[in-house]
Amino acid sequence: MTASVGLVGYGVGGRYFHSPYIVASETCRLAGIVARSPGNLAAARADHPGVPIFETIDDMLDAGVDAVTISTPPATRHDLAVTAIERGVAVLADKPFAPSAAAGRELVHIAEEAGVLLNVFHNRRWDADIVTARGVIDSHALGKITRLDLRCDQDDVSTLERGPEGGLLRDLGSHVVDQALSLLGPAIAVSAQLDVAHFPEGATDTGFVITLIHASGAHSHISASKMNHLSSRELRLHGEHGSYSSNYSDVQFEAVRAGRRPAADREAWGWEHEDRWGVLAVTDGSRPVPARQGDYTDLYDAFGEAVLNGGTGPVPAAEGVAVLYVLDAARRSASTHRTVALQLD
Image 1 (cartoon, rainbow, N blue to C red):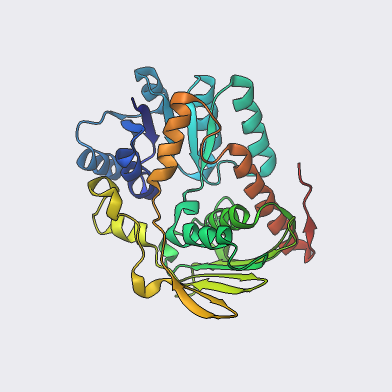
Image 2: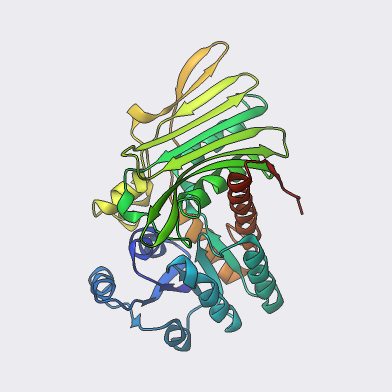
């Protein structure tokens, strides 16, 4: 048995980060797509012949689905999620799933009151470098983790959402902050600097550096950019006994962009090339750490299981709210040049 999932939005996110993994999932079935622009309509029909295409989310809900994935522009996600929740349909919302932590908490409350599953698509937890780093932490080879350095630079200014409702902090910031929290646990303090550019659409943050103090005592240093003609994915873990460092590529996105799909061969999907494996350096020497498989389909497998059989799902909305708290605090820190303390629930 599979959960019927409707995909709302077929831009870059819907086409490359959602539909391939819904199709590959063992617990989900792509039951419909909401697409409106001529280009998105043509792409959806070409990619998924036989899958119904709808003009609005209401049309798709009327046809009947178990869950919806919302992959539309950020400003539209909140209202679309509410529409689905009020119809009793489970929701997996793209990040950021709300414009602020307060709005996110409101959405969580609405879902809880309705008894409807609400998850956030923090798929980058299933990147090969993050899955491998989690394995290094769990192995205790480094002992207590004291520091995480996480850098994600993209030479891709064309995908920067410009204006006050866009910016890199809400885009890549959502990913890398979630990765840091998933690896090292809750944050209790945030300090940040933002790079800002002025466009006709308005002032836009185009890069950032964020420092998190975690409840464990460890600290994270996170940075990203999109306008500096730099492409880099670096991760470093520091621990009592040494370090682990990696410089992975974006293997899943590169494969999808090249026309490959996980449904064709999940066993071979999401593996980093051996020449980019990370290195563990401890007292008795250094050695490469074989990469673990990264597969966003795992997120959809877990989401479909929760839709069908109950449970919290792979990324409960409360974890998405924790990310929004950090992003809100980072913006306050950058504007006031002060460290912002966070209250743990």
